[in-house]
Length: 190
Image (cartoon, rainbow, N blue to C red; front, side):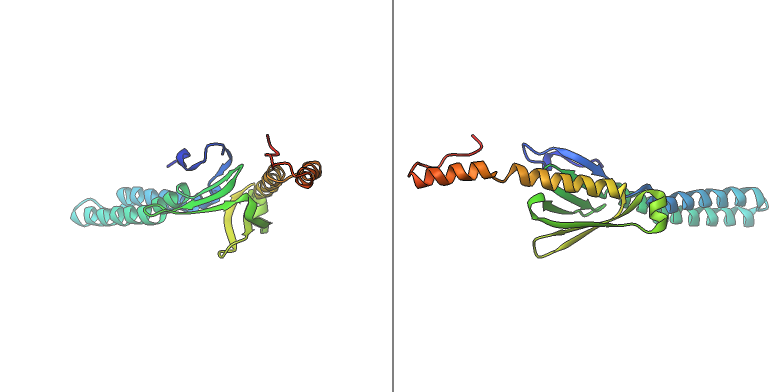
């Protein structure tokens, strides 16, 4: 369930590829351990015979349902949630059976902020909010690992993209001088 590279443009490259923090997997692992413990305890403690066998099957079936519902499903949601930062945009993708993807071009990012609760600071994760120009406004990325470093990297990406796609003072003066002399416009990046 890796992120498909074919969604990137020709000159685009991945800078950061993240999933939500591993703390999202604590409950699924706990459910799995408790379900296995319940089945083993039932196998050891229930009496032999028809009643014990039926009770063991009921415990095993209930354990399997809980593992699938509270264990496997959250794992699949975690695994299929991608926070991808490239040199051109931020891609947010989620969905197990259906897929939702949002692209935030770096040129449209107005603001970004992070928030960490005390426990999140201890675990090294937090919430990153990216505000972009457009009708959807804010995108909230929850449980971002190393959120402080990710926010710094996002700032660097936005600034580098802005610098790459804007004209410096000298280039602007040359273009204006050429226009004043009636010369045809040339590509300043050439």
